[in-house]
Amino acid sequence: MNRIDNDLLSVQEARILVENAREAQKELAAFPQEKLDKVVGNMAEAAYKHARELAVMSHEETGFGKWQDKLVKNIFASDFLYKRIKDMKVVGIIGEDKENKTMDIGVPVGVIVALPPSTNPTSTTIYKALIAIKSGNAIVFSPHPKAKKTITKVLDILIQAAEESGLPSGAIGYLRTLAVDGTVALMNHKDTSLILITGVPKMVRAAYTSGKPTIYGGPGNGPAFIERSADIKKAVADIIVSRTFDNGIVSASEQSIVAEGCIADEVRQELRKNGAHFMSEQESVQLSKFFFRPDGSLNPEIVGKTALELARHSGICVPTDTLLLISEQKYVSSNNPYSREKLCPVLAFYVEKDWMNACEKCVELLINEGRGHTLVIHSKNENVIREFALKKPVSRVLVNTPASLGGIGATTNLFPALTLGSGTAGGGYTSDNVTPMNLINIRKVGYGVRQLEDITKGVDQLSIESTDDLKEVLEKLLELLK
Ligand SMILES: CC(=O)SCCNC(=O)CCNC(=O)[C@H](O)C(C)(C)COP(=O)(O)OP(=O)(O)OC[C@H]1O[C@@H](n2cnc3c(N)ncnc32)[C@H](O)[C@@H]1OP(=O)(O)O
Image (cartoon, rainbow, N blue to C red):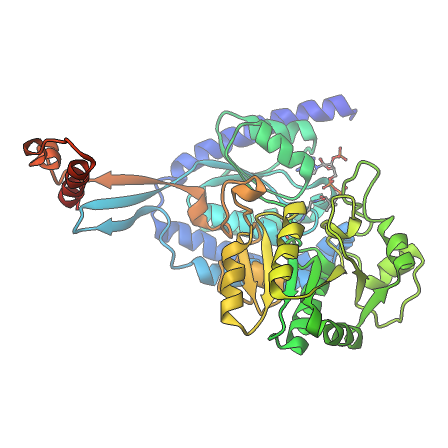
């Protein structure tokens, strides 16, 4: 088939998929929460059963990360997520205030179009499918072309399990003929209500161009601040676990370490002792040549590779037990390759004289890239932690934990999510770890409890001749409204 035929077929297929999804969703909209939960439970169980096979397959197909860590993510996105959502009330009456006579009704948004990334193809697909069905929505996927085989496989498993437990056919679907035109047609279809997208900058732009509400996980890789009161051994261990998890692919993972001057040598020593190689200036330049493509986009050749593979690739000589490559840096700039997201086990290392300067450096790093995403602080000083949390342009401040695992809610009690909102600061509309609650509209029900006259009662007896009078009127009004 030539390219034009392929594009046409893909667009046609997209139209049919959304129409089928629309019909299936009409049926789904009548499902009570318990019936949706039964379907979601079966989907989670099926994904969990195939977690290992899917992890190996996704690693083999994309070459990104480690299959062992992809297995952890698959278990996280199926079993762990299911346990967290199984008792959530998302559709129907989800809240009632008997005293004030108001009620909240959860209403599915309708048809969701989802794009999973090549970096986390299985776990993100499982997660998106589970939260969509939990909230009574239909979902149509456009698989990433570099992970097509794996995403198709996991969707077949999920669809079979869901339909066996009563999900109407078409409520979960996917584009078989892959093309940008078909993906754009899915997004632009009049019956598509929401787009749920992870990664792929070009597709994020297409989603926004469609004019549809779009939830996406923006660029992350924020700083990790190690404050003087921190347990340095644990902080370093956390950073290593985090930055090497799936070879640094998770967007919440650390991109730089900012250490206070008085503990910087101890931190360096601990990092070296545990497999970090501090690169010379020349090695840093040598490695950085491979970070980006000529158009400035991230080079997939370095994404999700081990530190040893990166060193070999760029001709840097390192000990065979090297886990991390670190570059000492002073300045932050969009031209500095060490200030940008890389999704591999490379870190920049900054030293600042005190926590206030460190605070500024972290803000500078986040404003350069990763605004609205995630920051981690290692400290025992509750005042510093609170000051940090109050002042940073991020949606997640993680404390004393590996950022990649804490951000997604594995080592913290944040919601278990593989789409991490960056809020308006990151150009998105939610700052949440995306949950089924982000996939519904809330219909507000309010019973009449007062007459219009009740609001103005007593006000006409007052004449407003001074600001004091005005204040009195306003106070009276507030009193009446209580
Ligand atoms: C929770 C988390 O941690 S998820 C965070 C993961 N982070 C990211 O994904 C970061 C952003 N992603 C990227 O920069 C890139 O996707 C990389 C570097 C990871 C991989 O790059 P690549 O392997 O070159 O793949 P890329 O994603 O750019 O896609 C390749 C092509 O497929 C296209 N494509 C991607 N998805 C689709 C789709 N669903 N339908 C049609 N085309 C698609 C892209 O537009 C791109 O087209 P182009 O070659 O014409 O530019």
